[in-house]
Length: 262
Image (tube, rainbow, N blue to C red; front, side):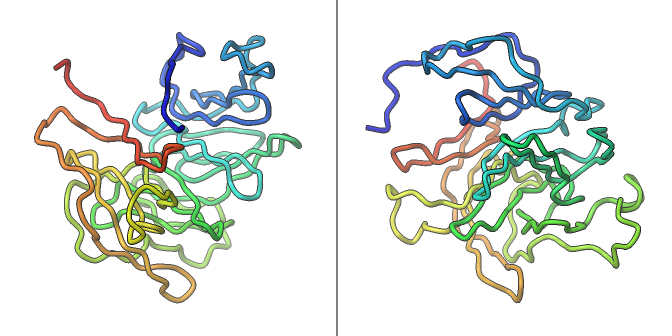
């Protein structure tokens, strides 16, 4: 019925685990510097064995920027992000901020695109287009394309990896921005519990505003433009800091947040 009747610890003792994804007979967990796979092929919610290290080398210099936000793409690859102030060294590829992907069958690893600031949150729309949230004020998302080179703070983080990139791609143009500059955990809503007008809207947490907003998306050439749609949730508790958003099996939006002990 889409409602949890029981909860239990699957694995304990992880440090800064920042993303998980179910599939292929177990649970994928990103915990810098590793992408781990915990097998659970009998589905008893107990790992069958010690985790397999699928990837190693994600950056660890800054806990606010570690690899995060695992999500399955429509192409069968497992996608994740890495923020702006850590450096990964994986299979001969060195990068800071960007979106990466891993193929669970072949084991291939790729840097999907470079740049974009300190990203926490990835999702795909119903046509397989990737959207990534951002910590850059005035914007809430990027429209990510494979092989793209995106804005970054060049004076701080250096030039793009691709020496043949003729410029870079910007954030999705935005109107009516409000709130703090950190947008996290954005999703394109595809559930059935909310009214039809929410289908295809970009719903994301605004960490510094203690709120979850929804945003309108519309085509603009080969990309998109967006504007503020409304407030989905606003807290009057300054300890409430929403940091991730998901759609539950019942079609409701689930929000993860830090908070105080009340």
